[in-house]
Image 1 (tube, helix red, strand yellow):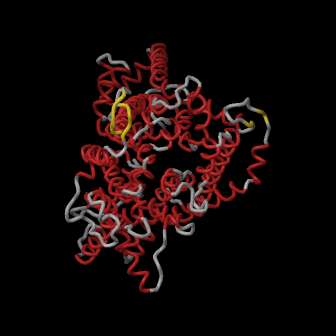
Image 2: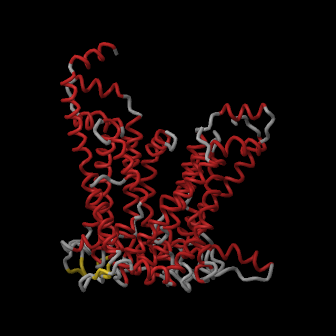
Image 3: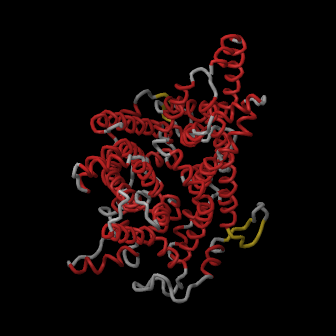
Length: 292
Length: 309
């Protein structure tokens, strides 16, 4: 299929550019709206990108929702609520990323390399948990967190990620570990390394692309998570950006420029992380792909 | 190899020692998942099954009512309504997302400059899908000043119509949510792309020698070779469409006129707004049964058309 047919290549580019514009346009519209002056926002014929971008919209959005406590719960005047949401989101996302990546790698290593009874049926059990709708376990889990009084805290969002990291990440890392040549571990075994040192000193350093991919997915997953914080956080000091933005959607609804500025600000960290990790990400999709 | 085999035979007792040590190490490595499985999956599943046979509002003590919740479901008009909403959504979303992601993957499956940039553009909506992009679409769908109707209005006016009011119109709210969800097919596109790149080049060369044109090569080489991936993605989107919740919660709150009150949304309302924990658990098991049944049907049906090369 690599034979160049000039006409079909041209058509392909035209279709790709058209679709690329369609896919990218909502983002462009979002940025344009976020920079529009309040007086122009309701005009039906306003330009997509305003002639005079209003950068202070971002500052206004940041301070649009004032609260009476600061990051440490001390009384404060007109403290921006988005700072608290951002702090909570980063806390959850970073801790979940560490927990999921580390424990999924441990479990995946056992399935990829160690021999133990019932390995295959146990791995099937891991995969089958992907079929289970989270709604089945959601209610008893909620009741369970209510027992120590941890509703309206970040604990129910963080703690579960330290228990295996989920079937998808285990599967992805196991597929990657299987591609690592066994000779390296055999050499380490001869040098007297046990499974723990092999995991830490051989497998982990060789799996950086796959681990980076899992870390990226995990971070973005908790950054965008909505249902979890919706159920477990109630007070404003505990909300994450996702539920915080939703809660103030109606409040900011009459000011679309501020709403869009807040949304753009929430997307920027994801984009920055993605562009830094893209190299690793593509590399491990290629090696683990569905038909590895 | 022979030396190693000999060693294994000679030191047989030592090998079982090693096996034991390895099994213990495996237990340590697996322990996070084992504990997590018991505490967050198996335990809650059993609890949920028991709860589904109770009436409980979290305040007064629970009452065992047997299968009454399941009987109630059969006559609950909101169960029928929310299931119908979900099925209509799935009927649009499943073909829409499969066709779009396959088309994008085919367009990108060429060693030409710039493909990486396009791949990133098509993947970004998947990566960012969340409250921020839902809020973005609420502005895009806004009937008066929104992007969609600014583009559509000149066209619909030619025919003497006003453009649809999207999220404000019970007839257009579901299509609007489907359009937004199809925008996020980048993940499926990547899976298709990996599948396309696994098709051996020789198959196309052989087909070309046999005089097959582009369309016949697509029908007789690409589609059969890709059928396991199509099957996988279809199953994935079926499950996803029965779990649709976030977007409807943020954008329409189930409305207008309950047209986007999907099954999981109804379940959420019963559990966390009305605190009917027993009834909501029964609804969750119905959801599980539906998803399982659909998967079994797809696997059965799949044996007829999926070609494992």
